[in-house]
Length: 186
Image (tube, rainbow, N blue to C red; front, side):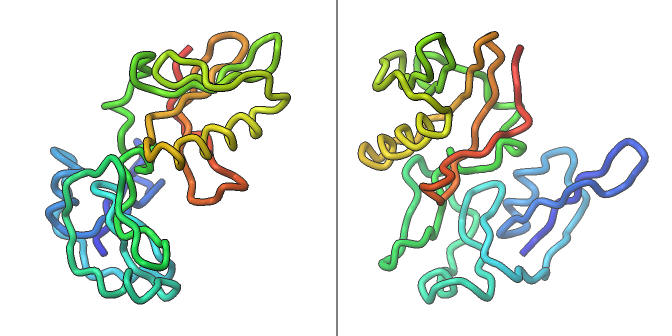
């Protein structure tokens, strides 16, 4: 595994991104590439911040451990192995930090979970697919199920009653299907 270090203004390490190869590291970092930083081991299974391919840890299934294809093209649907584990995550699963400069809310292509007077509604590509949820978490769960059923994973945004918009990041856990990123628009 390769690591890309992110430092604050004073030079302190604030985050490290896992990457499957030096080629993905170069592509991900662009002009911030700091040189080869490979041969790191992953204790737990993780995924490349650039292409989404599995980086097997000690908890990986046999299929994940035997995957030798790295530096893949992004995939809208991803790839799962025979036992249902990700070999490559869909591009919508990539960390919001990794796509911050490329992502802006797009009503014509994205999904939105919006808070209103009548509860939370779920909209995909400007079509309301459900409304009236009493909690945002229930709306998130409904959207997660809809995406699984339709094999479609659009960028997903949470919109509060003031119109502030925050990018959500999908998880593999249907009981906690989305987490908040730090990408927000007011």
